[in-house]
Length: 435
Ligand code: PLP
Image (tube, rainbow, N blue to C red; front, top):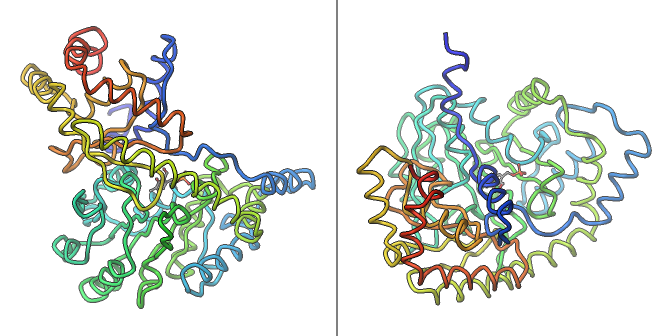
């Protein structure tokens, strides 16, 4: 009998957390690292919200609470959903979770049996693929392409739907691409789901970046379309838009109270409840007009940084970067850079000698980190299945302008350093990283 249950070999990870070890190694060597890898806003949670949580603690609201979430917070969420999506939801369909990540696993566990097919965006948040594999479902990645700004239409989705489809995952604005689905795209997708999918097929709509949109765009949600509130698990939270990643405040709106009761039961089995004093501040984030001011300030800063970094990256030979419409990432194609630096040849040589997980974008990522002090995320960190032959890096713009300038300058230098790359692959670091 093995010590570790077999299913654990199917549980994936989020490399954004794993990369921390490599960054620490570089820091220990005295390197200064520009952290383009970060998936968290470089802003603090708003002072008025911090005060509410502190006051609730001082007032003694520090015990267990309703595992579904305190009623005032669930009511604030239903108001927010009505105001932003035009959909009326009763509080018994809302479950508060520690961040917007848990509802992904809850959804896979609640609806998906072994052998069912799950469609999810690729590149996409890696936790989708992790959970799909963990529950023994069949992963069906929906490829997002750069030439369409990483959006997709009903036709792209239609080609993947079969009788075994049980769940369709959407994420807009998207991590890692910054792609956004338009109202028309969503209308087409909703029509397709209504026509082609049984009523028990669920859509999971990950809207955690709902506040972070550029160029005056407004957030669009699949739940605003006819027939979709009955089929959609809508998930969002406070991590990104309110710069509250460490608070662990998220929520899901379920199609029915019965389904919400299952999410509540999973909460009970795992962590009982989200701390009530945090939820009080969570409600104020939606209700106090001061929050909207903070959100606008942050989104304005992200937009200015986007406007700076995209042209700067496009000036680097071998880099091609689209302009994201939302979230706080840019996702450039770096295949030209891999070519210039000899990454493809090096990767091929490694694979000839022994099986390896090295990918060209992954090797470039490590070269930039270990030799130039620039931490990025590679394409394979956002779903491995179907990632072959796609060489992209994700850079987070949750960094000040000065760091953005310095980071891009370093990548520019690295782009001229083919001999440095050849040396890196062969020396101790390269051998330890790539085998
Ligand atoms: N969904 C997407 C698309 C994300 O990018 C993230 C975080 O990076 C999450 C969910 C998880 O958010 P939270 O930190 O609220 O759990």
